[in-house]
Length: 465
Picture (spheres, rainbow, N blue to C red):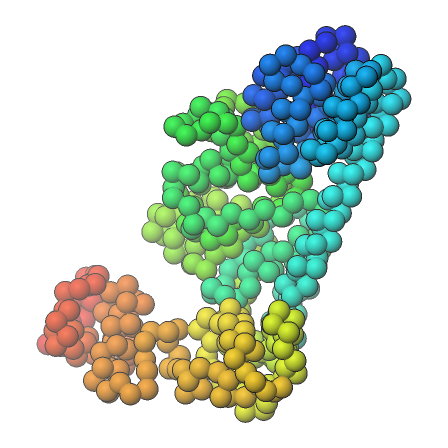
């Protein structure tokens, strides 16, 4: 296993001896000759293994060990100690050192210690992978409907490639789950799966999050920081809500997709990476392109393998499987023994519009499992809004008990909003003429609000008057 190793020893001969030994075995080796140098470089870069002398002036090997063990990185530390300093070595082991070598030692002894460290690192990685598998037991694709089985087949076909995938669909349809499925089925499964939510970061931080930055690149950049591209090298990078990436960064992202290289913020040196990109969005990117919000060339680079995820209302055959899946998940978490749902509840699920898609279904099941005192879930275990049903408006606000006038006003305003103020299209959808629509808006006191009329609309209005 090729390792990144830092050697720390103020004795130049020992330092060079250890370096030569490890370089012969194809490891990447960096050497420093003081604790001060080691402390500075460890603030900028992480290593798989640190080999350090215990006794050094000012900052000792013990100080370096404490610094490493107080940080978030699982670096393996091997201590070097002089004859008669075994007590120090024992203390180091108590503080978390992996091993120690007593000077003088042979190249074989050093090689053996580093090989053991490599085996330990591989074991740590395997344990993390197994824990992730256990944690992901309930993060799997449920597919019985024809639309979803086609997506599963597509995932299996594209997974072994490095082709970029663009996953589109409404919020809550499981786009991230599909991205993980592609990664899991690929030959990158043992490498990182890194996610960046492009909508969760202000534009000023996005570049640093993607590409990393050098120490001093901007105010607050106190050390070198790796970006998501470096962190996902060899694996998969999921760019969630790609439509929200600032326009000025889209060209830099395009360059990485084309050339597989980039620069950290504050650096002029190019870094090459091998990263598989998967992007997701619930927006219409072609519409964003027409509005000048998204680069067309970037869209074509992302849209190599398009995957369109259907909303839950279009994959009703999957609902019974999803219901049982979520019941099992939340029974395992709560210790409940619920075996399923009754026929009336299942019929309710099959008729409901599910504006929040699978995420909404999961939330409903979780709530029901927590509050129910029965072995079988029934309609009384679910919220009244679900039992009574909703008009299929994606949560526009219709409710049982509102007046016809209120419902009409809400329907007209929501339709106009969906058509971005275009009154001609809105009136066509509503089945009324533009003059009636104008009068209604005047009645509501919002006649000029959201107006986005074009000349053809004005013509339509004039013809009806």
